[in-house]
Length: 253
Image (cartoon, rainbow, N blue to C red; front, side):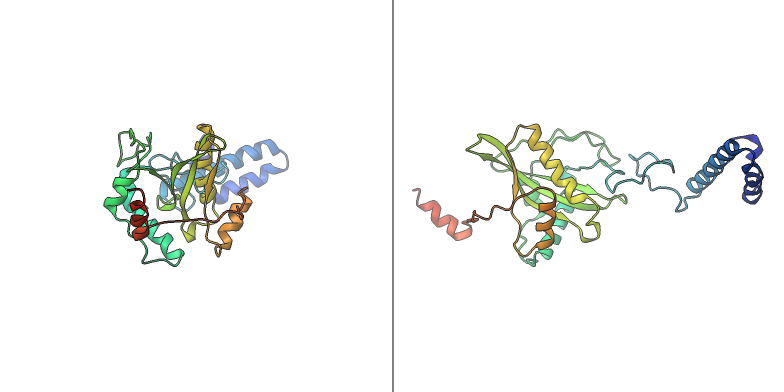
């Protein structure tokens, strides 16, 4: 910082800049830059709203940097066994949104034993060792991705598994559930979650990414159409479950 600015008040500094503005436009810009730097440092040092929220893995931003996206303060994805309580909470919130509050049978234990957590290089105060991940199997077929907002609160969830296209003889991904909390919608979390899955399909040479959506859920349908998804109106979803599944299995005996 220039020595002449070390003890200068803001009022004197503004007057000093005004006196120089006519004859020395270049000096004016330099003084203005120093003035803004003073304000920036003051804000950061005093924890005022002029600073930025900085979790451990987020370097402080310059006041001249572009405004951050909602995803920038934390690595975009979290896929750790310790995330299971958050996953269960978001599943319940999704059920509430879909008017099926009493339909959730998942528990912490059942999620922990059926989700295959992907390898992760994420390191945080709670997780100092990169995860080696779990292998996909018939008893552990699902994967989950969480996104967090700048306050380090869970913002959205994607829960998915791998499928297969016989005509293309290529693997793919089926998105079982996508959920973004109401207060976090419109900030890019949903598009980022689907984008992460699309990136994985492309990386593995896959054929498609697909999912189902309730017909009454117009906001979601419009969102999916905006990002390039097409409705397969000629297909009808079929399902066998519970007692019907047991009875059907008997036909193979």
